[in-house]
Length: 274
Length: 360
Image (cartoon, rainbow over all chains, first blue to last red; front, side, top):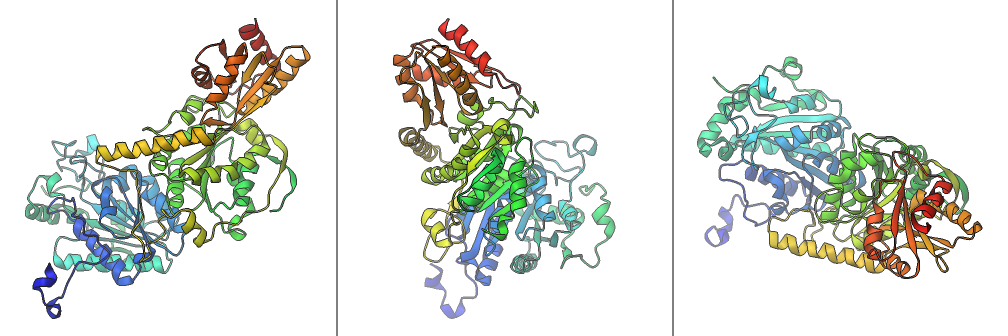
């Protein structure tokens, strides 16, 4: 349809062929669609569509295989890093990525996440952190901030009742097997460009067989947070980013410049703005 | 590896058969009494000879999901464990069955419940043949009774796994896994080339060439009506297994008045009991199910028409006996004799049980 009204010489942007035409099931305002798109664009631009195998998690993105036009496996809850490990080891010429949420990657799949990273598996892990279990109706996740309300912390998360939020990305950066660890967002055009560059770098790390490449994308869940998309983005900037600071944490196998070592080892409770 | 006659442990036989049968990958986690499987593989370093990948995982959850990931690329991938580890793997097994992924899993059963004991048992029959994980699925379950069968069944398991796109379970115990017997090894079967894999596993996810649709491996179907159709397809597959791939052995059943029904280690004990019985003039035979799923139902039913009674001997509190009773429609006396918690019965006590419970 677009081709009918846009003259070819004026066409500056189009949907990548690595995304299918299936209508996405994600809520309006959610970051999954944008995250999918930039991954697909990187696969397209690197010319690796015929070598890529994706692994989807259990959670909102369980159906990610409907949207990427590459071979895909749907893993059991939390097990995507184990699944990806074997795909890559048995097929070393493929590009393998997992796409997981915070419940999948940082709660039920913590062991698989840490051990895949620590073995230095040559895979890309994309981690969508929205501080909540979106698909099951907005329950507390390992990344839910102290004071943040969820379906299972209706009065706000309390350390004495629920324990501390987990900054798993910083934790993974301390492991020798991780080579590139970064935290991004996709809530503004500028951030989308940065996040895409990070994903490109992650796939290049895999191409060069350097070890684990890990890209966290802090994302809003306006449905779960019970906000409009605009409110959710503002809340994310004010509450999530101070606790989950954006930017590279580990580059070329070394802790990135300007990263305070205390952030990696000492973690004050991650709290919503008072 | 060429054809040779060697003395080896059952666990070692499994490992050597994996290498010889062209297995592409093994992912495991140590657990007694089968740790020699991974130890043998690591000592043999097949990645330097056949290119087989061997990796020690962080848990049984990880190893069975590594099997899922690797096998879903159309490669021959295996694991092994023992009862508590298999319980952890049951999540993965139902996903493997639900996504129709061929693979081979070995369970060296030990006495339970819980952490139990490391000694041999057969108390995972229900878990192996009636589910274990959730949902209407079946594993193809083979029960070797010797080191030779441990070796040979790995080769057969690959044929069955890819014929049905279904996980195959080799169900054994520490007695067969740890004992040393002579074993004829086979000529090495080369691992599949990429071309052979494409032909034998066109559904595999190794990267989508421009000329085919993407392959998706999943067990998710949100539309119930389609899930029902899929489940019917699985049931058809299981019906075909019952029709075409039941395996069993009958010894001295032609003239038998009484029959033992036993598999694996128990069947080895029963062979001796049968010999003693025959020396005493008792016409005793043995039906040994080799596949526990599909179960030799027809063979039990036919035997039930011409013998006076059957004794199921299991190292459990009585699990397979239910399938024997169902198969025979309870037309003749059928009793169970079991030792459990890691105890193997003696041939004499088994024969005594036959005399007291069945022959009377």
